[in-house]
Length: 399
Ligand code: NAD
Image (cartoon, rainbow, N blue to C red; front, side, top):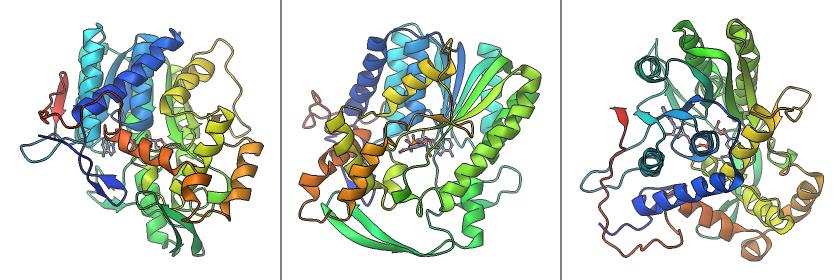
């Protein structure tokens, strides 16, 4: 199959196996070049196939020599369709990890379900005994409640009043005005049910009950707060409410984990291009401006650079850097630097379709988006006929 990108709205429906593999290798090489970390031994990453979760799995393995189990929900290829990018990423990650003698196994299925939690627990018990780090990095538009079967769909909306602002169609290169009506009470509740801390709490309580948490275990979930410019749609919107719930869950989990001397934390990460962030209105334009300014300052980072810092400076440092007054780890410190935010605020009102490509890094945004699916990667021949069917070597379960 000759595989080319097929963009539909804010998703690409194809992915390239060789491109995804090369992008994973670039992240591995970045971590290896930084040097070894004094890190965890046995790690579970929930949401391990793309974005921040994949970066966490790579840092744990190649930075700290840890054994990893990755849980994700990805699509396998068939004769007509490519696999999803996360499938190819995980296949490549496992190949590289196994080649270099690391333990790495994966579970493909709905992490919100009791069944996948049970299978993961069995695998931990059989292969690792106990785990000392759990990364929770799910991003999903939907959750089926494991007990009631209720389906929750998240909504990315403001709360209380409608929001009007600018957004972009990055692929057409157009700046557009957008108005989003406020969420209903039900939509707020549903978004909290999907992206809040409920499922994280279920995972940790279950693994604790099963006696699978090592003494001193750490668990980290990822969040985003962002600048005032995006507050009405992000921090003060439905997704922000879900993220508040995530933080409240961390505080609750700290009680649960006292018995194993463990700790739950929320790390606030920087805005990057991932499948999750591309779906949020306004955020892509903000990211295109942010990239322009951070690249010019030399402070631009992707997932892998931040997660390496998370392990080195916060989770496993002999003297960890301090958290903010609410207890958050702030990997978004460089994004929120006043000079960066001032530059974005003053440029914001001047951005139009005509100057989008010169005044923002929309090109970098698009490039990162293609790269998520294994396209635009140097050294990959996209005219070559490739087999889309790729196996994940140590896949334990596929549903
Ligand atoms: P992503 O879309 O790249 O990754 C999501 C992961 O979740 C994938 O591995 C996917 O397979 C998995 N997943 C989704 N639904 C699942 C299910 N039902 N069962 C099992 N696995 C499932 O997302 P991301 O951007 O890396 O986001 C991860 C976390 O980081 C989120 O909490 C997000 O809010 C946070 N974050 C993202 C950004 C950003 O700019 N992208 C910034 C800060 C924080």
